[in-house]
Image 1 (cartoon, rainbow, N blue to C red):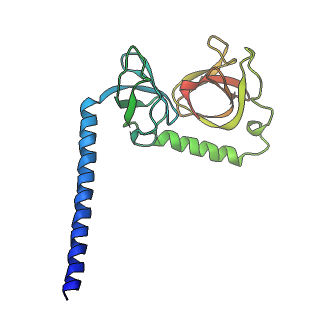
Image 2 (tube, rainbow, N blue to C red; image 1 turned 180 degrees about the vertical axis):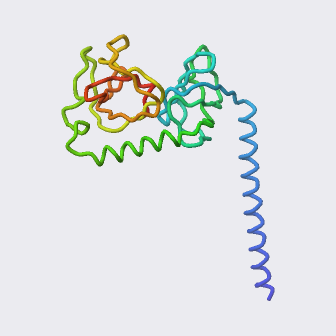
Length: 216
């Protein structure tokens, strides 16, 4: 009887000890978060690119910042995040004279709802998949090399225009404007230029749009 009581008592002590350590662990995490909150800073602006580990934005003051330490950041988003979204970046570390290389991003926050853009992209992909033998799926279409000689990485997929943008005949600013695409439009991407331009199919010909205006 005494041995049975002793085992129950030991089990009770073990359980209480485990719960105590768990509570201490949570308290420590909460304390660490509070300490980080106390030294964190934030900046808001318009997202220009996001790879998961690196984020670039144009601040509300017109300054361009690139954070290259975003891998562990928590995401507080509505429906994903795309270039053109308004974002708030919470970070620790120093940002000096446009240099954010020493800062670590803790949170990426955006209240923009991208569901409409994502739905358009999904429908466009479905429509393109269902089309065969047309000019859109021609292997030769949209494969022209840029006249400027910029190197192009071949690719094939559907991109979504983020906001109204000029489509140019070459992968460089100042080249001939072929036309314009509105935000939400879906395009077939055939290449990514080394200087940041995307090669697309535009009205059955090769066109180019700048990377900040296309989600791919």
